Length: 391
Ligand SMILES: Nc1nc2c(ncn2[C@@H]2O[C@H](COP(=O)(O)OP(=O)(O)OP(=O)(O)O)[C@@H](O)[C@H]2O)c(=O)[nH]1
Ligand SMILES: [Mg+2]
Image (cartoon, rainbow, N blue to C red):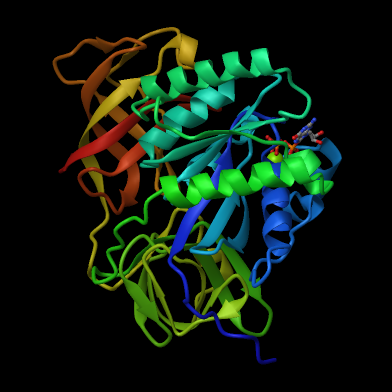
């Protein structure tokens, strides 16, 4: 049962594909692993399309529902890549996936251009703190150059309007599908995209010395061993044998095992995508949205002030204003919590407005100034905000 341990030889970054449904995110993800697996001295294994979209409903409907993680290595870096769903009904999964990205690949079909979730994902990425975007203009094999030029202009404008500096963002014309088929012109396009990611997305500062904190993304059971929680370490370092607290479950426990992509490790640090085996915690006591942290290092709270941008109807938001007493869902880290909005002296907030509000959540969660969140209602994003003061 001895598995090869994870050896940290290159800097590790978290990236992912986002964009409108069917623009080719999963195909591109598979193509990236294929191209890199064929590089000499690689360290990347090819992950085929149907191993990324592997739930039966995903295979049947031909869409991505769950976030899938794959890993690969370029010459200079080790990447964990999340392939996010584009379909409007699954944007909440995209929100929790994007919360941990150091950079994102925005996939835009050169045939279709900007579509509703293209714009929504850019807005959410900004909100959850993704600082760098590289654009893959996909399906370039099937598009004509003039139309693709127009799409590129449109995408640069969209990025600029969300503060991404659209003029300097790399835009690479690719074909995930032809690259998967091994067409050299298009495997070269994937190489060019990866070079753009390697050079344009900087290595973020990792707060490895801070107290350990990891938002729980998923919970699994390993028969005979116990409960496992997965997620990206937000800050600090955790070692096998460390005592941790599961905020939300009200439990203290000990980490008895640590893995990244199936490889055991002795210590995980900020930025790593990991699975933690927790001693004696029942499977149903832990949920997505809970936070694993160094005991006593954070105190969950429920009241805070926030600056919130209320999306306009054109951006997919509400058509009518919100007032005090409004009760939408708040997406904070991986948590999804109802909250009461108090607008104070302002009577209403109209779509398109940026306002200050006081929020009272339905339960305590770890909060801190500067933390980004999304506000959703009836399956769509209606606002995006940042925590001001925790009350
Ligand atoms: N011509 C062409 N078709 C492509 C390319 N990439 C993907 N496709 C096709 O586009 C369709 C959607 O591809 P997916 O990779 O599933 O798209 P997706 O963005 O992951 O979709 P969701 O995850 O459901 O949002 C499939 O039929 C692909 O074969 C490409 O580079 N060229
Ligand atoms: Mg997909």
